[in-house]
Structures are given as structure tokens and as C-alpha cells.
Amino acid sequence: MTNIRAKVLGVAMLGAAWLVFPAYGGIHETVRVAKGERIGFKADDEQEQKAAEWVAALNLNDAAKEGRLKQVIATHLNAIRDWHNEHPFSTVPAGINPATGNKLSDLDRQIIADSAIPSSVHTDLMNGLRKDLSEEQVEVILDKYTIGKVAFTLKGYQAIVPDLKPEEEAVILKNLKQAREQAVDYKSMKQISAIFEIYKTKCEQYLNSNGRNWKQLFKDYVTAQKAKKAAAK
Image 1: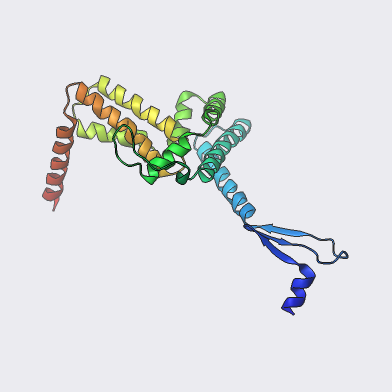
Image 2: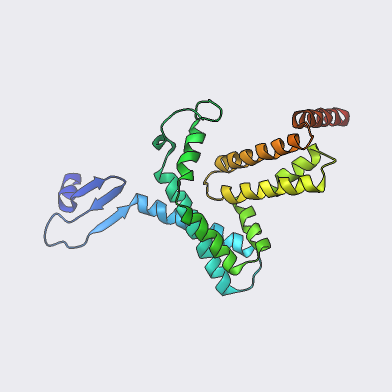
């Protein structure tokens, strides 16, 4: 019976897709079930849901604006995902980081691959957001992309440097906001965190150049936290 069905239907597999086609001219129906396409549709739905949730957080109460913004964000998320998936780290030759001499990690190579995405992808996102939102509202969306890393990291600097001056905080905040905007063009949280590390290094270099000793400040902070934890036992 199985052989008869196979002869009648003529089942073939091509890549990720199953193709079911008629073996005889009297049967005209062609059914194509593509696993890859189903996965793609599901992924698109997830991106659209994420975009809808982020826009809803703004409480705009304007259906037209919300529709445009959801489209802008979902389009960007899809573009980032597709570029990432189509450009794995293996497309970047293994080598060294010329700034440090260290061997490039797989994460380094993936960031290099993803950073080659056309700049228009980022420009389209920012222009699309700013068309309908204030700068404060744009920042809310960028924070959604980066799970609030700007505020979280700034709070860390305020704790480690308790006498942080307003001008120092302004420079740090500027660096972190630059990190956030750059990080939205990367797919994974590991990549986003790596982008923030670049700008955290800049912040710490700035503090050192401004008369601070970052290593000592961090050491003192860790020591104080350990003492506090021990006292609480």
C-alpha cells in the first residue's frame, strides 16, 4: 500500500521543503508544505508581536501612528534577523583583533559580520521613529531593544563612583546612549552587551583622564559590597 501511494502521489523532498505532486495527468492538485516558510512566518509574527508590545508601551492612543510605528519596528527587526542568519560568523575569516592582538572569538566575528549590514537599515528605523515620536519617546523604543541597559549601566557607575560629578555623568550618559543606538542593529543580547562594553571602556578611560582611578574605584566598590554582604549574614 505504501508503494502504491508513493507511485500515485510522487513524493519528493527538496531542501527543507516537502513537495507533493501528482504522478498522473488526471490529478491536478499540487500541495507544497515548506517547513522553512512556516518557520519564517512564525518568526515574522513574533517580530510583529514584539513591535506591537513596544509601541503599546507609549500609550499613543493614535491608531494611525501606532500602525506606522509597528511597521517600522517590525521591518527593522526582520532585517536584522535576516542579515544575521544569512551572515554567520564563519563568513568572517579567523584572525586577530589588530587593536589587541588577541584571536578573534566567534562573537567578535559575528559582530563584524553583522556590522556590515547596510546603513540604510538603521537610518530607516530612526527616521521612521522620529517621524511620529518625540526624542523621549524614541528613547523608550530604543530602551526596549536593549532591555534598559542605559539606565542599568548608569546606575552602576553612580554606585561605583559615589561622588560622580554632573559633567562626568553627562559624558557617561552620552556614551551609553551612543552604545544603545548602535546596539539596536544587532540580534542577540550577547552582541548588544558587547557593543555596550566598547562604550563602557570609553567611559572608564574618560574617568581615568579626568583624574579618577577606575581600577581602584571598582576594587573599593567590590570590597564594600563583600563587607556589606558579610555583615548581613
